[in-house]
Length: 121
Image 1 (cartoon, rainbow, N blue to C red):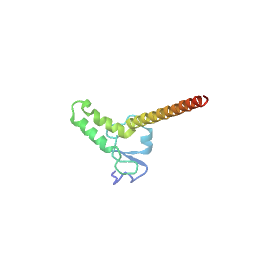
Image 2: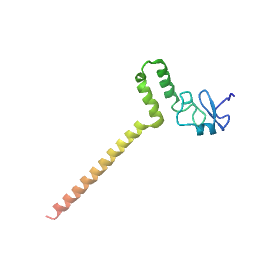
Image 3: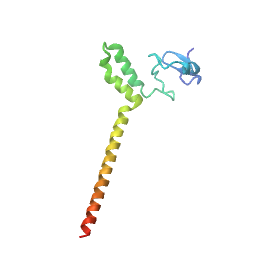
Image 4: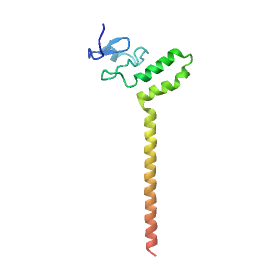
């Protein structure tokens, strides 16, 4: 069975070298083989947003003797998928902004209390 595009039949998932019916794919265990991972098709039928990262990582793994040589490519691929580093950075920025706001409010409160004390004399 050959399909021209991943949008050809909505009842099938199109992996890199297989076509699997939705019922079969939903019933499968969590383990996904390498041939099924990152088929290159995104949800809208175009190339997936992380496919280029996956492709670079996959090529590195196939030509390198040690997996640790591909660590940075793996990190890039997982960052594209999950945005963990981006979220971590955003949270640090947010916490720092909140800390600065609290410090400014504390300083304003202390200055206001200082002005009240000096106005009584």
